[in-house]
Image 1 (cartoon, protein in one colour):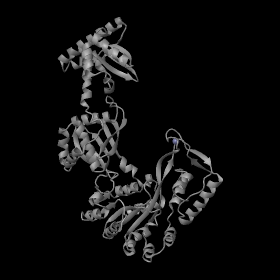
Image 2: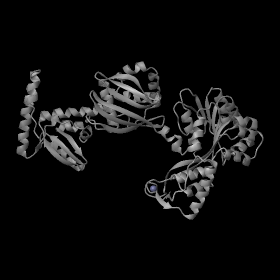
Image 3: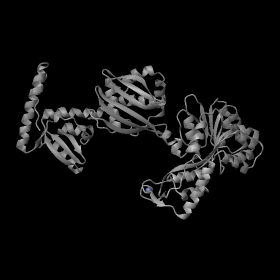
Length: 557
Ligand SMILES: [Zn+2]
């Protein structure tokens, strides 16, 4: 185990005699310590040459380590290896006793005193890493000041070199969020480190960081994402998160060793964004096509209907999230505000103080928005203003309480909206319900019984008649919900929406203006390819997402 470095100290003597002499003295001391260890029947360790993982160092406090000349240098589970100088030192013995009391199995090694004192300097690694407040929350005033600073990218470079590693990293993260970057790249070069953001799929150089600052940022990144701090020659990966305005932002960090130091890439996972993707919510096929078409429209009402708890607010937020581009001004009127979205002006309705949807909407329209979301249309006033706004170049998103998509039309007319206002102001209307997803951990395939076969076959026939593009067939077996620990024995885990969606058309406007009945309207929408929520539910059953009983629970097939 003993290592001598005569060779290296001889080479060094050419450049620095003093340091060579010190090295030779050290070598004598190490050899003497090794001999002493052998006599005492102990293992010897040249501790000065060990690069200790900071996590292992934490087992003994810096103060204890300095006072009692003991240092932990390798940890595996509850096994710990420590180096000491004097086995009979009462302080050393006390620390070892305490470790045993804490359940550590200890392997004690003898080290030279100067070697151990040199090793103790590694405790500095711990103080070089300043964890952000334990919950990693950046407060809003800080974000504001960061955002103000980041307005001017030219100042970011000098700013970064004057702030602490914590702040530098926060700064960069906030800048990435603000620019909508999906990835942050740190690329070490010979004399500096290039920081680049991937924005809309394209890498863009943001600034150069000096190597000193980068060392701090790199240590901080590794510490936060639980990588090994003392390992820099092999690739590592980890993750951490921080919160901004109640939004949880996940950061996935990966490192690779390069010629000029470790290179990091951080992928930013905005959990809100991900959860709000149409496909993740359960929209598919024709429904998703109509939703995406809507995003390119300049005006019109987007109405989502369903009872409370049918997921309509989440769908509206998913749409808002898609509309949320720098060139769009978005204002919402909500009761209550359920999610916070960056870049959107959200306003809370207060009916007791006369700030209701109708008066709020009038005020909002004076603020020159492109897109307005109104929590709910439930009176004539709101319906009228919403329709006017839609006809004058605004996108208006809102919800209503109706059972089906088509019933939205008579509902708005009953509220007092004139058909000549309603007909041209509609963009799309959708009704939806939530069904539970079958738990993937305990799902079981079962052959179809007679009842299931009959119900599904007739639904499939209807689906193919209405919208032949869906290629659906009846499988011999379907997943059934069973129940396990993961799903609290319900057999289900999570939810998915089933929906019926229609878009405006000339034929539809004609029917509305002629005062057509619900069944006449429905016939037209079917001719245009609209599946009912029940039929959309059957698609989800055939894809194995949910069960027949679950779809029957919330709708009729
Ligand atoms: Zn389960």
